[in-house]
Length: 372
Image (tube, rainbow, N blue to C red):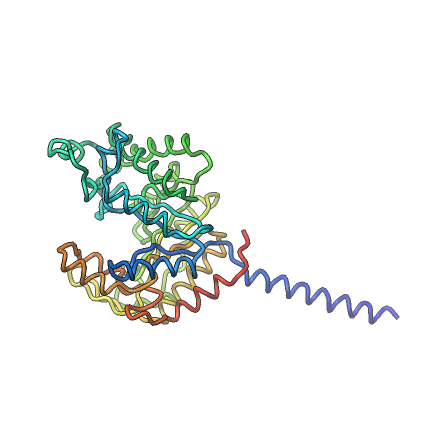
């Protein structure tokens, strides 16, 4: 007489176990977001970027990499008009309820020397002032104060949930003496940020690549970061792509793990990442890499699976749409650098607005139940 009951119980437990595994499979621990970097520098394309964030993202990454208004920030006077307008536009267009990552680079694009003066200086900034701020040492107390005040201004304006205050800090070709100064700079900034905003996570990001020095320098910065923050564009540097084949299936098995394991007690985040969907030929950087939509999608799935495994907090894809038109605009303005081509064809949609395979994966992960 007990057999039907036992059979029912067994079936129930099997179903329960299966449902539990299904729910686990269909959950995610991490937010998905992009920067509002547009396909071209027109209001229409900027609006499309913010529309994508509203419709298809959990968060937005506001990335500031245009130098520091040192004089204005040090004396706590109004910031340059262009900066204030930029910040205000971001505030107006960031949809309510979206998580916000604020990323600020203390370094210039070489990622081994201090950021220059903000591109649009305010009236009254003299050549002697510019000379002082350009020549001051990295750990000069005035540099520290100016940077802390600048980041604090952005924090107060944008009210972020997370702050990357040291974008891509682990370049392996740092001059050792300069890196010592940079570490001192970060340490002083970090202590002041945590005192002023104790509940807000502050972190520095590490470029993911395979040289021992890159990993070693990252380890030296663990005391000044709340997260293990990764910046990853492997198609340009991973050893498995040396012959131009960027298939993510060929990556070294510990490619991301080496960095995540630097301190497993610290939460993992992908502060920025992307992958090419088209071939990349850039002779000035000795790059001739193959890119396909399928490999781009496979890369996103690989990174997302790693984030899920490590219970990452968020994953930021750099831009949602290819910016071929933006490249032409920058060239016409004399502002283009070859480096900008690295990310041109990494969009979730191409330059014509055609959805790529990766967008299916993106939306599939977003449909999962968020569960930390």
